[in-house]
Image 1 (tube, rainbow, N blue to C red):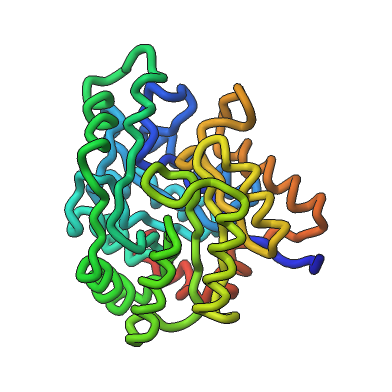
Image 2 (spheres, rainbow, N blue to C red; image 1 turned 180 degrees about the horizontal axis):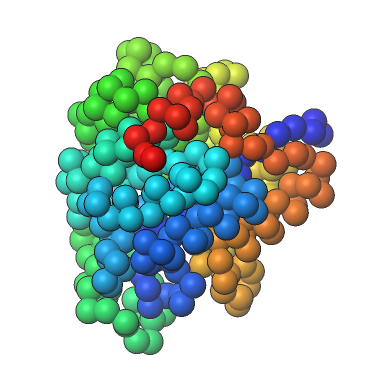
Length: 311
C-alpha cells in the first residue's frame, strides 16, 4: 500500500438530522462555529457547512445566518470552507445557492442529480420531538424528491463555478450520477481536477455495501481516468466502516454529524472533532499522512482562502 496524503472532510451539521435526534448536533451559529473550529484543529482540511435557524434548528439558506458563523471559522482556521448547494429538499435553487454565492466560496457541494431522498424512517425512532417542525419535515421526505435537474446543475456551474471560480465536491449518490458528471465534462462545462464524493447508504441512493464502493470506484476510473480525487461518505452506522475501506482503497474520507450521529454501535458522538480524531487515528495507523488545508487546496486546484469574501 502506497503511503500518501489523505484529505479529511468534516460535514458539521447538515440538514437531515434534527435536534431531537442528538443533544450534540450543532444548531446555533455559536455551536456550528465551535464544532467546525474544533474539527479543523483535529485534522479536517475541509469543512462542509450548512446553516440552521438559530431559534429552532430547522435548515436555513439565509446568507445572514451563514455570516453569524463563517467569519469566526475563517478567522480561526485555515480550513477550506465548503458551502452546501444541496440545502434541503424544500429549498429552491436560488435559496440553495445563496450562502455560497454570498461569500464566493472556495468550494461547494453539488448533488449530481434529482433523487428520492428519504429519511422518514427516523420518525419511529424518536420518542419526543423538541420542535413542532421536525416530525412533518421528516415525514415529508416520503412524498418529495431532491431536485437537481441538468438545467439546475448547469446553473450551479455557471453562477458559482464560472462566475466565482468555486470548485465542487461532486456528491454522487448512485452510479448514474457519475455518468451525469461525465456528460458535463464532455461538454466542457466542468474542467480541471474533479473531487468525487461517493455517497452510500441514503434511502433512494446506492446501498452501503462494500462491493458498491468498489463498483463506484471502478466506473469512476473508467470515466475519468486519473483526472480526479475521490472520497467516501457513509450514512449512519455505515460511516466508519466505509471510510476505512476508502482509506484502504486509496481514497479520501468524510465524517461529521451531518452523516452520522454515532461514534460506534450504541454510542452517540459527542462532537464532530471526536469523529475526525477517530478516523485520523485509523489513517495514521495505516501509515498515511493527514493533508493540511493548503495541501488539500493544491490537490484539488482551489482558488485560495484569500479570494473568499470574508474578513
